Length: 242
Image (tube, rainbow, N blue to C red; front, top):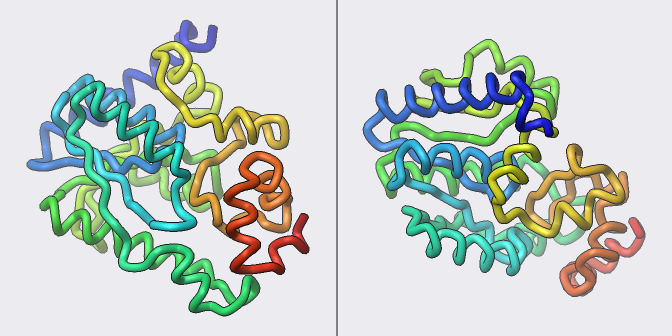
C-alpha cells in the first residue's frame, strides 16, 4: 500500500531524476552495491535507466559477506545480465582480526579504512567518475548533516561525483519498493526483523563488531550458527556477548 502513496511516488521520482542527472553528467558512473536493502533499490532503479550501468561490490573476504548473499546476487546478476563486478579489499576481515590479537583490540577505523581502500581500488580499476550509494539520511545524525549537499554533488575532497538517490527515503519506502518490484532480498532481514524490526535491520559484514553490546552476536548465534562458531574458533571471547 505504501508504494501507492503520492509521497512514495514523489520520492521515487526524485531518486530517478538524481540518477538520470548522474548518468547524463558523468562518463562512467557506478552503483556501490553492498547487498543491503538500500543499495539493492539503487541497483534496480539505475539499471532501468541505464541497463549496462557498472555495479560494484566490495569483497571483504572471510568475515565479510555471507556465502548465501554472494551466491544470490551472482545469480541475480547473471539472470539480468548486469555489468556486475566484485573487487577485493587489501585485507580480509579475519586477517585484520587476527592481526589485532583480540576482540577488544579491533579498531573500527582500520576496518573502515580497509573498506575505503577497496572502494578506491575499484574507482581506479574501472575508471569510475561517479559513485552511487544507497545511503539514507535517517540512519544517523552524520548522514542527516550531509544532506545539505543534495542527492547529486561533486566531492572536492575525494574529487569524484556522488549520487545518493534514496537519501530522503524512509525504511518503509525501501521495503515498499522491494516488495512491489519483487526484488530478491537477503533472508538476513527476515531473521533480524523479530529482534529489531524490518526498518532497523541492517546488513553488513557478518563478523562485524558494530552494536556487539546490543546483541549482535546473540542474533548471529541464533540465525547463523555456522558463522558464529567459526568466529568463536578465532576469538573465544565472542561467547561473552551471548
